[in-house]
Length: 247
Ligand code: URA
Image 1 (tube, rainbow, N blue to C red):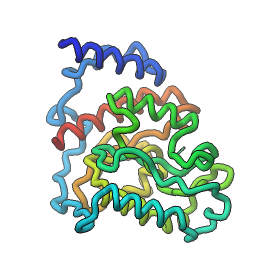
Image 2 (tube, rainbow, N blue to C red):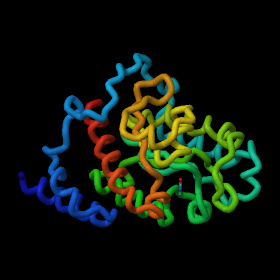
Image 3 (cartoon, rainbow, N blue to C red):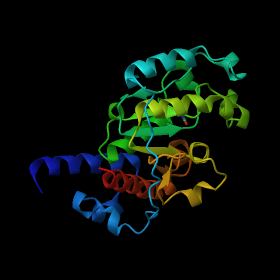
């Protein structure tokens, strides 16, 4: 292994350790050990749908996202606007290859106006680091842009109102892969009621595009059920393989 690869590897093992994943990773942790898509049995071998996602004509992602951010900030489509401190639009690289989608802002996110800044967010940052991604490199958004009271699940009509914002974010960013964190994000993005247990482990597509969606557990769930972190690590490895297969 070259020097930079060794350093990168040490960094990755450090973050895996921080995620709470230790001994069992070492066997498959070297980059050359990550199987390619062709020998990755868990990747669903679907033909990619032919329709590419077209960006709105003449809109740069930066300008488009700024404009959309202002629209979202003024949104009163559902009752959640009454309880919010501010909307949580999303953050990161407007030209990101990776779009990470969570559920909805919590207390800290509502206070700071940024997604995934609480405890779950810290774990998300470590999960991303474990696959060599910095937070700033990806774009992080939620299904809902306003905090539901008492951190309850988003209601279908709230999702119905808010989803068009996420759709527009996806059109503007044109990510190469979407990582859906948790059941609500996965079922909403894939427009299904299938359980997260069944959605994990294979590659899906967002709407009628070629954008692959990989599903994993929500970091807040992983904080409550750390024994599931191993499965989350498998999901992240799958996502890396899927992303590499699209290059
Ligand atoms: N959980 C989420 O799904 N999103 C956030 O932004 C924070 C916690």
